[in-house]
Length: 359
Image (cartoon, rainbow, N blue to C red; front, side, top):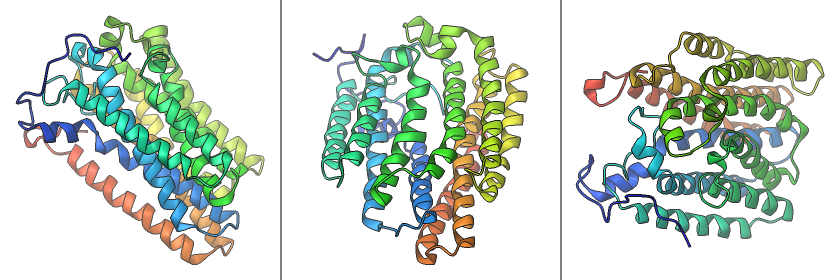
């Protein structure tokens, strides 16, 4: 039996977007899918760096799999998080859900149904993967993504949501892509991903700081709810130091090329800015105008350090005379991300009167 959200409306009404299909599209939260280009592309870049040929077919499968699981998670979350989203009056464009169910644009069961369809599609993609290692890793990603908010596990309601996101986005997705390309997960990929996973946990804590009051009201026990505001801020600040220190240690040990280290370390100013904002209380009073730039850059900080890692790997692979055709494909993917990120940044900086908050 699937528990229904409390006080769920019977069907779609003329919500903020006016038509159900626009609300259905809003549920997908497509802006978050841009990130998926990076961990998959990074894994493929590392495989090429290690001397493996580029297999475009499995690259495409890995990318489609990541996108399918990600959108599945959004539709599933919107349904099971409806009570928390309704209680949230401090939402930003990056926190508090899409609001499509809250404002009645779409019926809650439509969101859940879409989640089940995408779950089935993800399962079929797992079934066609060529090795048991890939199937095991992909299955773990699907299961963790579904039970992120779905019962009975409801990981994000029991203090495990932040680590679950890091495990999927900065662990399982790139691991699946690497296994499909190289048959194994190279040590270099693990060395690159470890510091980014720490920042991913911190990023999710920042997002949950903005939802902490409404989450506490409905019994959603994220890490900021469990440990409190100030301890959460201290952990987020500490994670910035740990991540870049880890990055440097891995380079000193020879597990990470210095070219990759330099590219990733170049993102450190974003950590400094984030720390200053948090210490200045930007998330303390739950003012959406002050929170929006913080959650925007906390989210994109992780994207940019993974993009920097991918760039560093491509450059180091070129220095080692790796397959130029494969590197060109990966360069195009990275450039495409750059263009789309620039467009996102332009949208985020538009005045609120033009439909976008400043970031």
